[in-house]
Image (cartoon, one colour):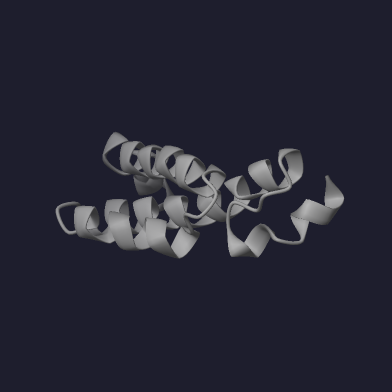
Length: 89
């Protein structure tokens, strides 16, 4: 796969939409990154392979990253992976 294909609108738009969804899921306490991926996988069936994979990866890493937002400010970890961030904030 060429690197140029990653930055085509057909791949970039699902990737960015997946990242936005991952931020909302990760910042909501009680929702996990695994749950977000499970919710987004059925949507990826209707996309080309590279766009679907980009969307799933975008959801996965931004949900884990965004779980640190409520962990730092509210001392409530958004995801189990961000439990240690409650001690930092």
